[in-house]
Image (cartoon, rainbow, N blue to C red; front, top):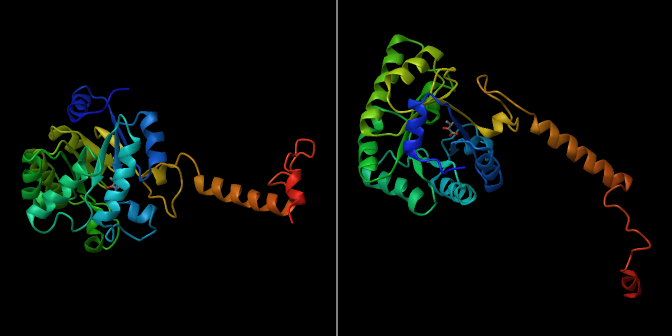
Length: 275
Ligand code: KIV
C-alpha cells in the first residue's frame, strides 16, 4: 500500500473514487484501520465523548489531542493522519492558533489538522495554509457549536442555512483547505457541495453523494452509549465485551480459568518445599 498524500485525495475526487475515512484514538485501532486500507484516520475531538465519556467535545484540550495524535500517528504507515483542533485552540490570537496547529505536525507526527467553521475561522486558515500546514475544513453540524444549536441537530434545512454552509465551504476552498467535512446536512446539500466545491467533500450524515465518508469508529463497531441515526453499526462490540466478561467471571467461579496445571508436567514442585 502507498502512503496517502493530499494530492492523491484530490486525484480520487477527479477520478470519482470514494475516499474512506474513520476516526481512531489509540495505536492498536489505528494500525487495524491502516492495515485495512482507509485513506484518512482522523484523531477526532469526538474522543471527548467516545473515550472520555463526556456529553460533548467542548472540554477536550490540546494536551488530550496531542497525546492521542502521537500514539495514533506512531502506528500508521499509509493513511493520512489528521489531528482535530479542539475547542478554543484556534479561536484566540492567530499566532497561538498557528503554533497549536503546527505542534501537531512538529511534535505529534500528524499530516494535517482539521478546524470547524467557515467565515469565522477563515483568516486563521489562510495563515496556516500559507505556512505549510495542511488544513481540512468542517461545515454543517459543527459539534463545537452544540450549545448554540441546543443539541446535535441537522443543519442546512432552510434555504438561508444551506446558503451559509455553501458560502463557508467556498471560503474554505479559496483559503486552501485540501478537503472539507460536511456533517449533519440534507443529502441534496451534500450533493451540491461535492459538485460545486473543487476539493473533496467528506460526508458524515450528509447522504451518499459526497466524495467520501467518515464515521466515528466506536459507532461503526457499536462501542458507544448512543449511536447516531445516520451511522451504520457493523457489529456490536458492547455486547461482545459484556458477554466475554460474564463468561470470564463464571469461569473464575467454576475453576475453569486459570486451568489447573498439568500434574505430570508440573516442574514447580520445588515451590512446595518453600516455607
Ligand atoms: O471529532 C470527530 O470525530 C469529527 C468527525 C465526526 C468528523 O469531527
